[in-house]
Each structure stands twice: as structure tokens, then as C-alpha cells.
Image (cartoon, rainbow, N blue to C red; front, side, top):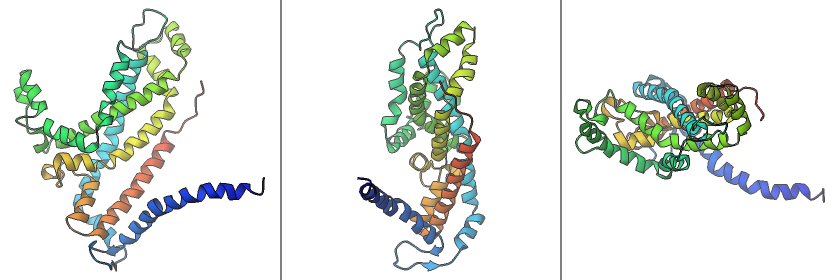
Length: 304
């Protein structure tokens, strides 16, 4: 029986490993090679040029401007989304009345969870189109609501104004993602024994103290995973920006992101070598951000 164990294990491991190597690892290797070539994508031959594409990348002002927008998303998106997710999850699970020793959520919390999660059932394309029309200056929902409440002075061409176009994209990304993390954090909070919250209530702990001293430490592993996922989303952002603002990345490229620079380089300038160089740079940047996030947020695990 022991003699036949290894062939049995290999029979199950080899097919998925082979598929992963063909469909995941192989494209990465090809991208690394293409980034060292000059290739239009329409010829069978690519001219090897070494690191010239990376030198071009270092001098490209559009790339650095787009990267700065991704950095802003990297800072703002996880902070806002996780903060709102934790707040809403706390209200839905332990935010009810405190008149008795029983800890409950706000009334109708199950309905709120469904409402918060609704954006997750929509594709990115639908979300982009939906909000593009919502931000329309004349017929859009946002300006319509402002006019209805007498705030006509605040109406504007939201996606046509360079000073607010980027922040509109950030707001849409938060709206699209916060519901998932509300449900995720709610599931984590439901696993925390109610005795801990009731003991804090007996000791006279305030809502903020309970949240900061109990909820956050006991959900830290979940928060860490959420931070990494949102960081990866922030380093992408291509689909939302392209659908809402077009290939130019908004007026004066005010909301341009690296993914959109890559798209323009490959499919509008027809330079797949430079586009691959951008992709390789973003690969290492994303990997670095993920590793640093895991190391920076590492702390001793709290058991309960």
C-alpha cells in the first residue's frame, strides 16, 4: 500500500500542475520575453532590443502620472472600504440597543446585508455603465438629486471636470466593493463569542472601545486579507476607468491608471513590447505591495 502511495499522489497532482504551468506560468514567461523585444503583435517575428522598453518606461511621463493615480487608489481605497465595511458590519452585528445584557445588531440587519451585497452581483461593465449615466450632467441621477434638494450650485459635469473625475472613480470603486467586505466582516464577527461583548458591556466599555479593543484585534486576519485584495484592485482599476472615462483616462488624463496606459500602448500604438514591459513592472509592483502589506500587518494571532 505504501509503495503505491506516490504514483497515486502524482496521478492527482500532475494534471492541475500541468494546467497551471501552461495557462498561468507560461504566459508570464512569454510576457517577460516580449518585454525585451520590439513587436507590433501582427508579425511572426519579434526584434530583440534588450532593456530599451524599460528605459522608455522610465522616461514616460504618462506612465508616472498614471502610477501616481494608482498609488492614490492604493492608499485611499483600502482605508475607506475597510473602514466602512467594519463600521457597517459592527452596526449590523453589535450596534443594537444596549438596554439589556444581550448584544444584538440594528433592526433589519439581514435586509441591510442583502442591500449592501447587491453591487457584487453586478459585473464591472454594468457598474461602469451605470455610474457613467448616473454622473451625466443633464440627465444623470447625481445632479438630479442635487437639483431636487435645492443644491443646484453643486451640480457639475462630474466626469468632465479634471478636479473631480478621479474622485468619482474612487467613489464608484468603494461603492462596488464595500458590500462584499460588510458581509465578510459580518461573518467573522458572528464567529466571535457573544460572551466577550457581553463582558465588555458589563465592564462599561463604550461602543468605540468595544470596536477598537475587541472587534478589530479578533478580525485582524480577515482585515489583512481584505487589505491585500483591495490593494490589488487599486493597482488595476482599468475596467472602471475605461468604461466611465474612455481610453484617454478622463479629461487631461486626470484619472488615468497604469492598466489603461498598457491598453493604449498595446492596442492603439500597437507596441506589444512596451506594453509587456508595463505589465512586467506592474507584476513586480503588485507582488511587492502584497508582500509588504503582509509583513507590515503581521501580528500575534489572538485565539478565542
